[in-house]
Image 1: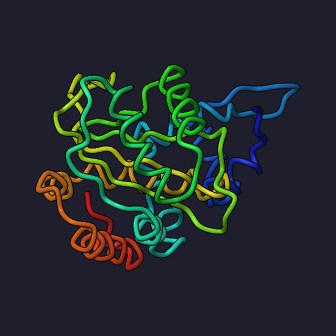
Image 2 (image 1 turned 90 degrees about the vertical axis):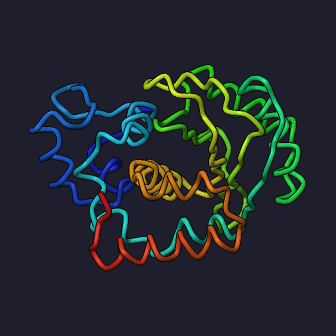
Length: 225
């Protein structure tokens, strides 16, 4: 889907001037159509996932939806020891559990998630992936992030070649919050301390405490590197 400059600014929760600056600096994917800037919805999403949008990971954008990641994980759950020899197996097995907890159709969600993986792998780097699909929005006023620890690290098509051992399944209720949570998860997974903590496989209660502290630092403008 083609987006205009004002659409991108609204989705990313920044000013049009900020998007214009990113265009001038050639930091955001765009093209021209009839002398107007246009943006591919999928390219913007992949740009957010790539964690190359340093100008986007600022208090201006990430801190605006206070504790959005905390609330999404609170609505979701943490799933340990999910079996599977391939990412397809792990996604299917994880969704069977997730769908029951949030009352969704497991078969439909699985196929949409796998279609997204075919389009482009949702692996970030450092062993983290964020399975999600923009072809489905939760028919509620909240978002859900389910944290999954597979039994064994799995190949996920990550650009750094690293196997994935932490998955954040993302289900959002609107486009803006979808991109916001993608950006937060990408930013969160760039921090070595955060990654070390994730690899301890914390319980939901412990993880929520950690996420709340991390988001508090964003809201105070103390951006962890």
